[in-house]
Image (spheres, rainbow, N blue to C red):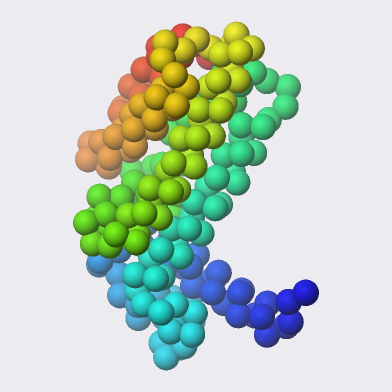
Length: 201
């Protein structure tokens, strides 16, 4: 059992991570200084290194925190009862369309926002991104395989390859949405996803 001090330390650390995630989802990693995060978190600057050894270490922890939450939400979506695996998958992509707004993704699009930037800055952060996205693709592959087995969707390639292609499609659409400032790329991705899986949902 954690002591009160350990619980407080964990709570402060989580608060700093959540604050940094929200800010960096809007501004990027390099453009945000530690002072801005700590001021927003109401945490003294001198205590930052009690929780993280460096900004890079903070970035890795933030990405791990982000993906842990993301994967837990994805698991919940893909385990919804009373509907087919195809419907669960389409619900996931529909939710992606609704939450990955070009205006304000509220920290939900961190992988898209930071992917290209930090992959060139930090190998540790690149590996955290790779591990997190691999977890997403693995879960999608399992759902695709289950959907094919129950007959709610049709695959023309191995589930892992289809999952990877679809995830890349949606990441690309997310980038384009930021460029064109409309949801049109998401609509195109949704249409292509239905075609790839041979579903009409």
